[in-house]
Length: 188
Image (tube, rainbow, N blue to C red; front, top):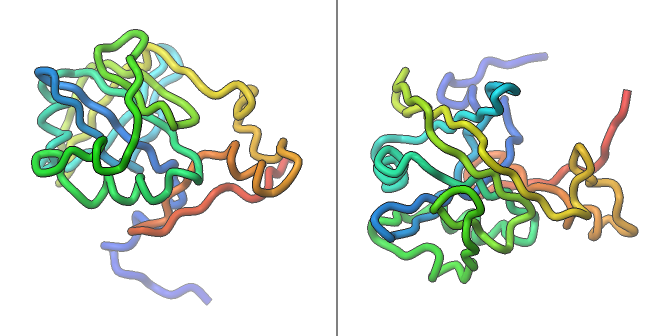
């Protein structure tokens, strides 16, 4: 039997979603924010949308710089991902407090997170505020991934052990401080 849930929880029915770390840079300062409200919106040109609340430090930085890197972490970074979602870059240097390592971007001035499985470099093309979040639409101008983790799709079932398999999978966000990784690939 299905039960009605509060509309405030309806978005969680669309979980799990990739738990990304979004890096931004403005006037030499780098910030990182946890973001799960991310979705591809075009194949040609390749584009992605990111929904960000206007009250966040990242929102202002992205609005001004118009460049970002979507970093895709694995299970090993779950604590850092949670921590980056609980503090504001206006108050805390989250890169320093989490011990994450920056590496230079290839096609943008924004660095990526070295420990992540993949980086998607983006340039904002438009933004719209349909509700309480701004939806930034960005063209993907470069993408890099750990070779053993991806071959057209995530290789989550390729490791020798379940632990190896989990290390090759992106971290997924369920809500709050709850995360998961894919457990089994199903081909139909």
